[in-house]
Amino acid sequence: MDSQRKPVRVVIVDDEQLVRMALRLVIDGEPDLTVVAEAADGDAAITVVDEQRPDVVLMDVRMPGRDGLSTTRELLTRPAPPRVLMLTTFDSDDLVLGALSAGALGFVLKDTQPSQILDAVRSVADGNPVLSPAATARVIAAATAPQSPHARNASREAARKQLSTLTERELETARAVADGLDNADIARRLHISIATVKAHTSSLFTKLAVRNRVQIALLVRDAEAE
Image (cartoon, rainbow, N blue to C red; front, side, top):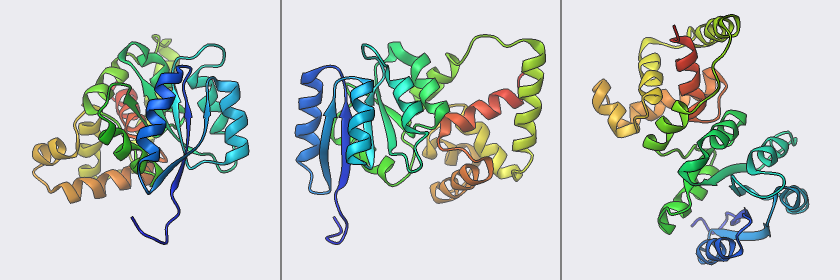
């Protein structure tokens, strides 16, 4: 860890005390991370985030009262919002999709290995999205209720207009992201280096004004919908 860099400040939001305790033990065991507060529901999360101004919020999706989706949407309206990393199980794809569409930077499963959760927190703190490729594909598949023909046409045209700003290689990368591929798989598909994939992906975030790979995938899906 850079000795000049302050530890990443984390708030844990989960209605299960044992989950919060386990996450705190894992996170506080790292010199570059520190848990500054916990919350058991969405309303309490908003209060502690306003008080503590954390860098990252580990947010449970399903909670009594205000759920993780509603809480995430509220937090992301703040002038300098924290980066949100969703905690989920696969039975909550619909809520995860909503959170990612709203701007959360990613999600991890609750049974993810501790080392991977730590890596995810660090990545999100640096502004990098964290999305499991397989889970991404499943979330996209669960996306939304069918649209009316008019709404579908409007979404398709808007998405195509956004994608028209991309180079051919960036568009190929966007389509690979929509297929749920990770950087290594994209590199193999397009016969380019992983560093080039990362450069293209970074360009996608900038040109499309998105914050995560799911938002890229949804644009591709809308643009190519029949």
